[in-house]
Image 1 (cartoon, helix red, strand yellow):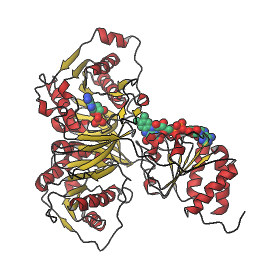
Image 2 (cartoon, chains in turn orange, blue; image 1 turned 180 degrees about the horizontal axis):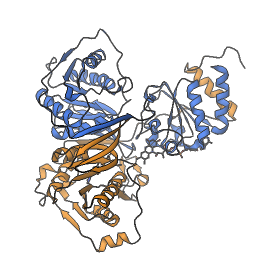
Image 3 (cartoon, each protein chain N blue to C red; image 1 turned 45 degrees about the horizontal axis):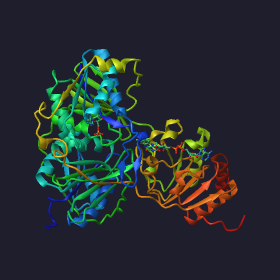
Length: 269
Length: 333
Ligand SMILES: Cc1cc2nc3c(=O)[nH]c(=O)nc-3n(C[C@H](O)[C@H](O)[C@H](O)COP(=O)(O)OP(=O)(O)OC[C@H]3O[C@@H](n4cnc5c(N)ncnc54)[C@H](O)[C@@H]3O)c2cc1C
Ligand SMILES: Nc1ncnc2c1ncn2[C@@H]1O[C@H](COP(=O)(O)O)[C@@H](O)[C@H]1O
């Protein structure tokens, strides 16, 4: 089975801090990681390859630094990696991102049987890119998958959807977005990352390689624009009470009465 | 502007699965109507299925000016391929300005594909919608970085302006049995073949929780330290006629089901009263609860960030405060 996994390098959320004055992300000290759900997609691809044979190809669209994410994926066991990078790709929303990724997937030979994405990223958090690649390539899609079985020309997959557990059968080629619970993430073997840097190649495709025009990609190819960034509105703080437990409980009961959640007590205790 | 027109209006996608629990469509009809008033447009609900008349009537009773309905046995199941085909066709025919759906699992799977087919923008899981004064554009406020940041997004040059909206953010209008509206049934056109075939569907356990609708929510965090202490929250909630919510670490600890998770990656609640015990007040959590009218916090650390947003903060140890509170309440109610 030929599998393409789309991965994105994202800031490691616990290291992200906000500059509240300027409403921006503080870049210093922020580490980058493979989006956690994309890592799960990669693991799922490797597991399918183990059972069904074939190849796993990793692609990412991003600045040149994203090559590190691809190297890590190679170290874990991917066969091939392609970096889609071009100064004009910057500022892309999901419409423009999915266009570049779909175009790159069309150029991969042979055309994959399966495309895997994460269900969503931790930074932009939209979950749009997977379904939008599927739409551009005319493929069926299933989102939020947490179990995959192969049955001949079909995949039987499970997913949680609005309080229901669905089991669906989908024709290949197809695109799935995966969520946690799919498979455990294994540790990198010692030395594998170094080996991935020295032995395996990362292909690099830019706008010309993909036969794209400036107005189709990046900021110019995006339909949405961010007007401004802000932090959630603050809520003022109220009374803060310190004291022994019975005093605290007394305060709480009085507040419940004031809110008419408890009836007022007739007599004093 | 010509008000009584189907085109150029505000559309809300009708998601009626689990009608009694999933109220997001009704919430969006209410909000959409507000936007429609501001822009002098009609609010239109769209509904697809094999028998949709009763839902169409409900949408009218909850404020829709017009319902655009499609009835066909092939539309019985919520399927991304078929729903995209029909809605894309109708959007091209009627050209709505704005198209909204609830950020349910289905909404979040369906709308990206539809937006791509229509070659327009989409924002995800919005927590606010406003009209920009000078341009009349829809300002879509969407959280990123797990709710640390809110981005205000617009779609200036593409139509429709599309957004999925977090359930529980807006309030539905009361049911008005006398409301007047019209229901139209445009031609559906051919449906695509089914490539994703449903084999089995079973309800997830505890899916019947209606946390979003509870007037009182009692939430617990990892600070409770044990499943037993967390369990006391259920009794507290029962005594106050409410329901139980949890932070991410408490869910991870196995004290509460995922369905009870509050916050950016969980549910948004807007109860009359929220009591939060043993929670530090991380932004990812507080984004989900700050719509509560009154927030009471119990935490033993006087410097817990949560006290900054609480209306009443009690500095104390849950181990002693909770049993005492339960005793007092058992005597009272
Ligand atoms: C991308 C992302 C998304 C996230 N989404 C969510 C989300 O949707 N919802 C969510 O909840 N979290 C979410 N989180 C996690 C979030 O950042 C916090 O880690 C979490 O909310 C903290 O939970 P807590 O308050 O239970 O635990 P802690 O932060 O550990 O706080 C425990 C508190 O309990 C107090 N305490 C301890 N013992 C006692 C006692 N005996 N009596 C009283 N008080 C006591 C402590 O003083 C402390 O303040 C997300 C994180 C990321 C990175
Ligand atoms: N720049 C990118 N390069 C490669 N894959 C991406 C990129 N952006 C998003 N994806 C894929 O699409 C999924 C959903 O991303 P998002 O729509 O940003 O939440 C991710 O988990 C990735 O699998």
